Image (cartoon, rainbow, N blue to C red):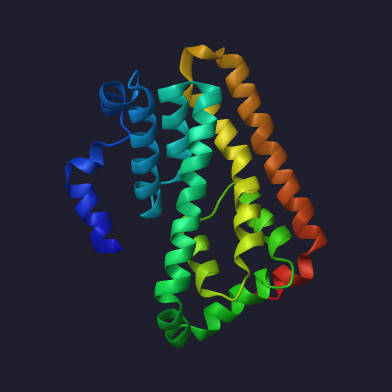
Length: 204
């Protein structure tokens, strides 16, 4: 994965999702542009591009409402892709070499995977790709993890799509809404943590 990330960074793909590429390849291109955006955003996010950048770029390319939809499609596809690759390709390899870390992920997610995944997703910090890979090699059930991930992506996707939408939404409204969403997701994650503190501390 590190090699693929290096190749992407050294190739024209490094310019994908920047302003010039979006203006020439995505905006005004109809279904072709929409499909191209989702495809590239999914692939790049699967190799570590922060989903916040995907949401920002989607908001810039399509406006807030449509941008949010395409950001959600790309980030959920990325989650399914990385989780599935870890589960069906790398699970045995990782579990054999890092049994303690896999056990810790199991401890966190297996008892209440839906709620604990929401807790992780609502946190304003963290590594989305590593979370997907770790969950994939654990024994957590796929359905609650993926559904909770999709729900947990909403606040930050809304926030960054809103910011990326530019002049279509007043700056004060965008900034205020983003702060409210950030605070709400942080408070919700704190609430979930307090109600499931024993499970979380079992990682230690």
